[in-house]
Length: 396
Image 1 (cartoon, rainbow, N blue to C red):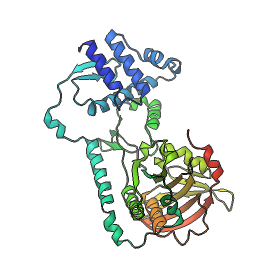
Image 2 (cartoon, rainbow, N blue to C red):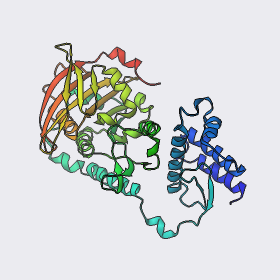
Image 3 (tube, one colour):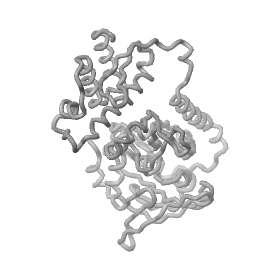
């Protein structure tokens, strides 16, 4: 076993790493397990629950809490050794089904290994390549595009001194067994965040050893298409755009920037409570959208349809007032065609019909398409938002 001083230094390095800096519970658990392992304690699940989680842990009631916490700790250790700890000559290993930490001395990777991209890096470089390519082609497309309109809708962005961030809704994924009896990336419509996956583990602890978390997400085709359309518009008006993923939302951006969010309802993330608090007349699930019909005063239900040759999507465009008089616009849909259709509509076709429309509003559209290509866009309902209510919903 490595000397205690070396183990302590390595522990300190792990706790200060990006993989652990925001995971206080994993930090405390790792420190406890390392100390207990050095002392040769016989660790039991209940003992860890009492020592680490204190009164939050009750034997026989939250019996999966420790297993989920140790599972998350293993995942973060794996992430650390794939990144900051790649060249470490000491490695902390917690074998599956155990709680004691093994302190392994390893040979550093050879130089050739430095040139081998991980799956995450290949995925990231692919996405970045297409996004950069799309932005690089803006001047070319812009010189051919004669139909970009500067409607009241976008002028609010261009006339404001605040910078603008575009958030692209990225989907949460994890690794696990597929129906092909092989492993791969899984997208579960009911699990849209790490917290939701942890809650699933607490209900199904038997799945802990079958599923692995990954530190990347994925984007659908609406992202590059909508980003290209939006970039052309802002480029034509000498305004810059900053790009972020929805999983990277920073609450500080909500108060000092203008924002455009483009994604599916499932990718709202930290924006979810804000959007539905401001729009209480809308409810969205995996298969349907419910809205309070302004004419009948009753709730109406719209079903999403996705077949090989037919798609019916219901998209929402909502422009709201932020906490610092900034502008925040949501383009939301269930399928790609919904957002592609509304973004193009608001850039190319909005100018004439915009007269008299309220500045802060929520519009609901029906989008029909074939083979995931939009063919028609129809307005179902338009609601004026009560601006005075907005200040109460923003997180501090």
